[in-house]
Length: 66
Ligand SMILES: [Zn+2]
Image (cartoon, rainbow, N blue to C red; front, side, top):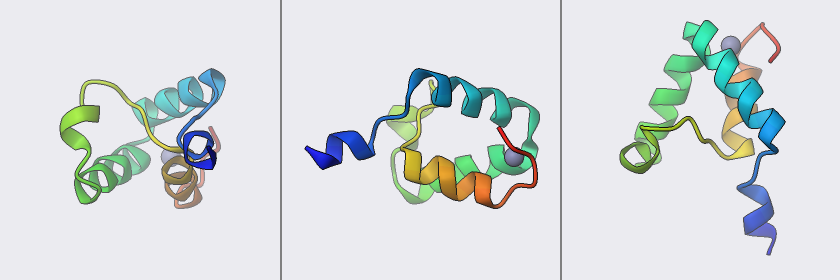
């Protein structure tokens, strides 16, 4: 049950993160690298969809807020 919650971003959060990735090369690269290490790039490459924990860790590396 908690696993399902952990893997859900709200639509607004997801959209905000996607927009941020598109204008922030730092986070975009971090996102790509994180996907590779998690071996999920093949199923996620066509859509920006990340678990909240990944989004949080990426944005913590970045000076720009979503
Ligand atoms: Zn960023």
